[in-house]
Image 1: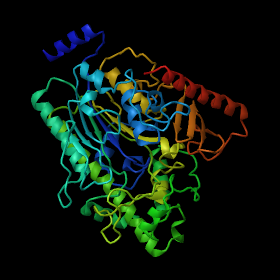
Image 2: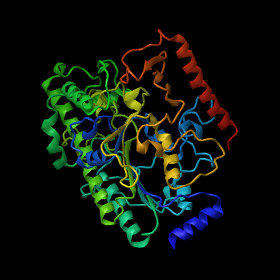
Image 3: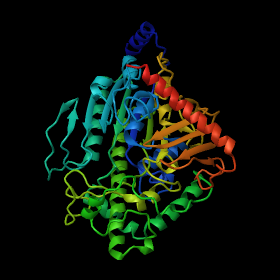
Image 4: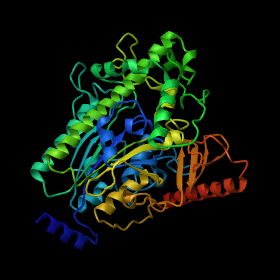
Length: 520
């Protein structure tokens, strides 16, 4: 009956559907490094995500926008964030703003809902509007990113909840998973014949570094060896797994946080370090302080993996495992930022507890983004490359596969529409492409070119060639087929190629500008 109604509705609306559509569980981490997961070469214990990778696909050249809110806009619409007023486009009227999207750029949840999907959201939002007005049936929206233990701003079904008091048993990562499991249980009980789209946006391991004491204790001793040793160990494992080959870049010791807050450094004290200095040059107290920060970061990731395991158990319990596409990725690379927000930082409190405010910093983010250069906000590979896992027993037959086809977060919304059998008419052409062909293995390129811009950092990839520049710096050129880690700048050797790619980058930026000029 439900299936018949769906076909009748789609026929009346002019949409086309293929049966049976899969359920979708889309999971996003926040500020997770490329090699943080065990299945991407890391020492962090992530057995549930590793199992998904072993039974599904790991993409080795998947990209984000290098920053949280632009990635989320691109992920759920299929457009570059600059096309839809969700990131700065030089010269536009919305420069520097996170404005409302045009009406022609709905979140993917809207057409999915119209096609009979039940859509649910849990976790971070970082988009314009509210979840229920954007196609979601239920939502737990955790906005307060400065307090994992006692958030002051969170919503259930778009209704604001009371602040969580300190001393409670609340922990944000657990709460986000609890909400998702609650949504799925209700779905199984009340809507068993309808497909679902569950979007889970964890805040972990974004700063502040807040973790449960028992989780920290498991990781504490692991990082005594320091960030240089951890980076070398990860690189060895990455090559063994066949994820990335080439040369490991030298650490850019002079590159620190993207934003400098001198007063915040004073609050954190002399043991904080805002450059990725050689580990052996740090004092014993500095090493102990830095070691603890990475232990908390790892604890946050391990707790997230544990909670993902609970969500996956719910899929099994509701007999949805075989026909659920599970996708996992990060919104950007690990962060080099160092700051103090929220309730401030009490240096006398236990590291990782509610009264503290610590950030990973450039030393550890360099290790977490192994084998790539730079960090969150930069559009070099370290800021813009994400681990990406796809698992779907009914649709992905090859287990433990590596997909090397370059792809981008703009491809998620088209993928979900394609799998639902939907072909909506868009007022403005969307650059995203369906990933469905890649589920059977590497295929022809999905894109002629991919484009980046964030806070003056810019890049364009065409085929295996990538043109990239940090804000205020000249263009650099890399052949990613032989130099994925961006170690050999070929700009002077191939000036005509630089000019061609630069012109392509500008042409795309200009087309986005023209669209916005005529969009209300």
